[in-house]
Length: 356
Image (cartoon, rainbow, N blue to C red):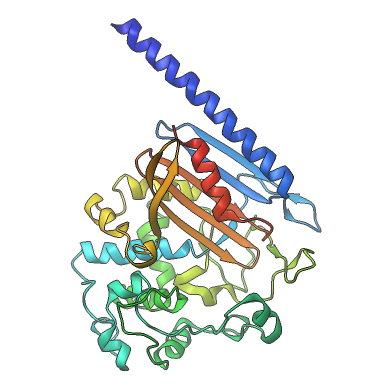
């Protein structure tokens, strides 16, 4: 009997090693063909990992990306904010069905009494966008003042609070950074601490995520990749527009590494950050297949449908993907520093090849 079990284990291991090599070959070929710049980390259910890094963290200085390179993770930040909100729910300090002004008493306009915390989480609040950026062309033509001028989180909240609702709360999905700025301020208010400090104490420190944090314009972050994008149709890489990264606040201001984000993934899916029942509520898809801070949908691969969650991030040259195949316990982390690829398509291609 032991021999049979041993043989089965050896066969499974051989199959997984072959699959790992196949995925590695695909990623290497893709990176070479598409000039991908960034780091990729994939983990299978048994702990087997595949790590790859490509391109340059600094083009003029010829500094290569490595597994230790820190990257801007843009809207993957929203996933951390959602977890902090759900931790408050588990502590019975917050009710998702209560309106904003229950926790921010000064939020006195119509949204304050009509928009619930749940609607902020799943982008059905009806709040107007406060950054007024509709596309890349308008950003190049008119700039993006809310990010190119310094703003405190209080000033950001004041801008959001001054706007009128653009749709009935709960009726339409409208992806909007304003929702998560408000959530960040609620977290700060309930803890009596800045959002950044709560993030550090509740998630980063307990998970020993020593290569993660919140970006600030005035800080020099060691090993942080510079970001480059295509500002027009000439397809010539340029530096990102100058911005104050902290203005993305709880919606998109974080940096991290692939290994740190894998720590976060393992803790999230193993019940160390929120309870399994809370996680199930978090990933329950609503409008636009969006849950609480992430997309949740079915991926077709190997003749079957697999439930997956995806949390992408994109700000100019910063590209990030946090991807998990739920029924196979496969996690894919992709962090990039150029806008030369379709990271949504790539992460799904990798997942299809990684699924057994």
